[in-house]
Amino acid sequence: MSGAGRRSSSDDLILARELALHAERPVVFTGAGVSAESGIPTFRDALTGLWAQYDPEQLATEAGYRNDPALVWRWYASRRERIAQAKPNPAHDAIADYGRRKPRLQVITQNVDGLHQRAGSADVIELHGSILRVRCLDGCAGQAVGWESDPRVPPLCARCSAPLRPDVVWFGEFLPEAALARAQRAVTECDLMIVVGTSALVYPAAELPFSARRNGSEVITVNPESTAVDEIARVMLAGKAGDLLPRLLGA
Ligand code: APR
Image (cartoon, rainbow, N blue to C red):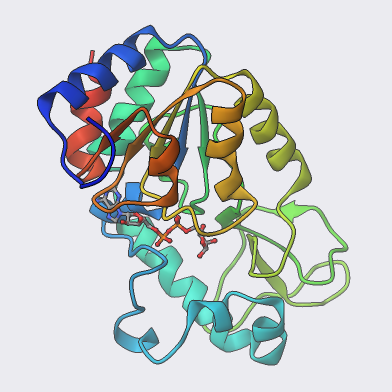
């Protein structure tokens, strides 16, 4: 059962499956761990290769971008390239399949990789934006989606010639209001929240499971490691999302 120690007995999986099967208004809330088996490093993984000497908290900030737009742009271009070559993994597929059986499922993600959408999940709430979109650094235009992108230098805004920037939430920035409002509404209504692959360290996103619990929702966590969310979880499934979600959500 849940509680100290990270192990999942088959009883846990049976109970979690029951909860997922009978939920009427489920929410799946994901972090970088759901994309780990697609080969996308999690945020708390140390940056590797060319970027090993940088700290994401230095690169993923407006100050970092204004200080060296080309450097930060190249880092995002390399991440976009990695994402373009990545594929949704069985965790993304299981969530998309679950959504086809549970029309009221709401997927809320902290990830910017678009893999839930590529797996077929509809209407994904992207709390931290999307690396596949760009917008004007000086905020003058709406979101551009595609653009002629030279991986070395940021393209310039057609309206004010400021550099375009990735349409993601950088450290110290507010979350997109509409996405956050939708997520907060979803967690007041859900009867089950499945929390997958997040360290639950970054607010306000990390508040969502606790809000859901306060509103009477059951909570299931799926993560190889323990996180603060385990304190409020009815069931903790210890392991990889790509392995556990097909078993948890499969028809
Ligand atoms: N399956 C499930 N969980 C996994 C897997 C896996 N295969 N591999 C790793 N994890 C777990 C880790 O144990 C960790 O708890 O995924 C979590 C990843 O945590 P972070 O790297 O902190 O990513 P995340 O929680 O999404 O970070 C939230 O912080 O850096 C900011 O904006 C960034 O959206 C990000 C936010």
